[in-house]
Image (cartoon, rainbow, N blue to C red; front, side, top):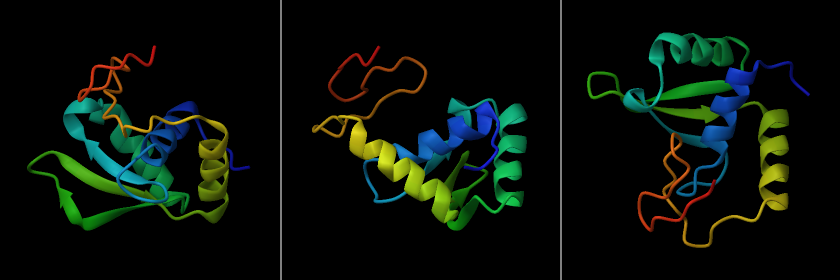
Length: 109
């Protein structure tokens, strides 16, 4: 397994929890993350060959980027974790700060 920091794993776990696409990819909204810290974390993941940014789905002025995993070992690890964790069948939109679904109000704490 790759040697990643806790913050790098946090990003990987965030993008792998996406319910709108298959695989490990999701929007990173700058307002939801401390970009003074996570800009460097994302840069590190890119330098390590683990993630890429899709520039066609990114608008830095609007404050978001589409980040996706490209490392096969990481993708396999995250996909295997998904199979062992029971997911919400409603495809909840969970706020990462509160762990409460923005759509239905389900509390995941």
